[in-house]
Length: 465
Ligand code: ARG
Image: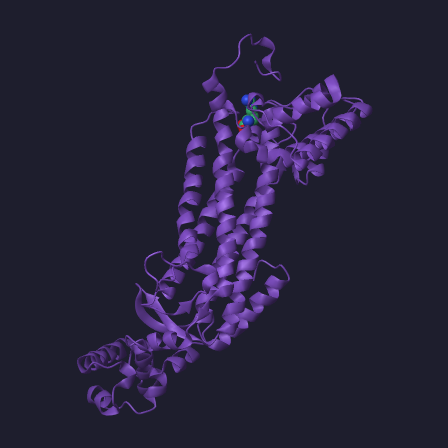
């Protein structure tokens, strides 16, 4: 059967394999809601401008409503022979209301239609993702407030560096996710132009009102160049780029959870809700959800690359290559939404082992910098010299097999005789974090203030600082 929607000059049917490679309905049926929405905006405009009779416009609108109800009820039959969502809807419209259905496609092409539908879809998805990221930020900020003073080791090179607080660590992710939301918001702003009315590529001789359709669909304005309107997929690429960065952030947190929950670290415990057992090793509690969040970064970043490669060699305007824009976006955004939700669940669920964290924070001479700072502040040593003296003391502690803060005063004095017993408060991990009150520093008072600020902002839906 030739395609009934465009088969006028075709005598023969497509090859079986042609149908298989050409049809997009299996995946673009997801766009049905946006397709109908855009068609309704278009037909209302055709009626209002007198391009078709208002009565015809009403008839078409009623038909579209019926199709919407059929799809919602699951009684609509999607057909591969009709290629895509646009032709499936239009074909059913013809069945329902007869030849007047053919007037819907006046001053329109599938090229501007698909560009419009896809923008509407991605715009909705960005809204959903923003809400999900906000919920994750809130979960993190609440845990941060609870654990504002919980001492843990901070790392550089994954080597013990300086004591920090768990709350401070979690708030770092709140900042990252805030930037992610900013990227999505920027994308949504640039995305928000209506391609509808660009028609196939050159515009149309009909006296259409693009402002009206743009407004009806919640777009800020119609896009200014008809060629650009039908061939631009920047909005999808930007969304995938923002998604890739957000997924990378989730992956880093996932990796931390994997580390923290391993018995060797023992910093954090996830409940049975977010762990799995092993079929052979009864002792195991595996952080599968965190691992999968980490892994999904691959397909999300891969989707960005895939679409970038689809687009990079395309001359203007539309080419069928662009039909390959949808699957990577659908898959990546699904994966991202799932990853954010799973991460939110894990963050709400996780329970730190405060003693284990503190013990680890005190190991590895983590307050060596505090000692050097103490020598600068109290004995007036230049920092470089203080660093050198501290290095000697650390070597001494190492030779005695103890941590810095356990070294007797006599030993400290043997390296620098002006050191007094007051130094021990600087060597204590709780004292160390408490002293770091510089703006953005890890002091519990700072963390508490920042966590509260974020919670207040996030509860009000706020994005920026
Ligand atoms: N299914 C097509 C797509 O997703 C719709 C646009 C078809 N346009 C065309 N000129 N064949 O890109």
